[in-house]
Length: 89
Image (cartoon, rainbow, N blue to C red; front, side):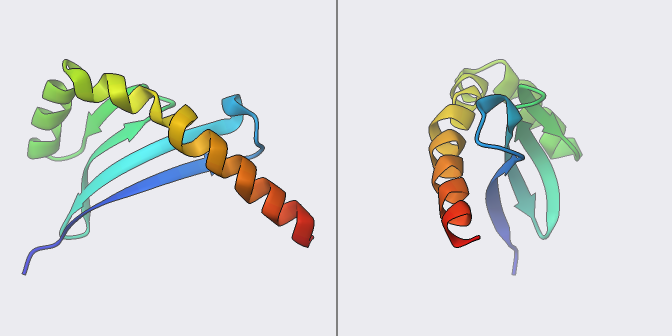
């Protein structure tokens, strides 16, 4: 069979918004073919299909909504994770 999945990540050194990077990757059969990174601010394709999708998504609504995900998805969750880690250390 074939396997298609997506992974959302928040990489951070602190709970400050500037220290957080949001990454959303798309995989097909364990090969990452396209990624959005808040550090880059756009989609980047790694395969022929990924490059075509990146061009389309960077010119549409997809990139605009993805740019807000660092604040919406990561900022709150990173604060929760940092607090949980500090109370256990």
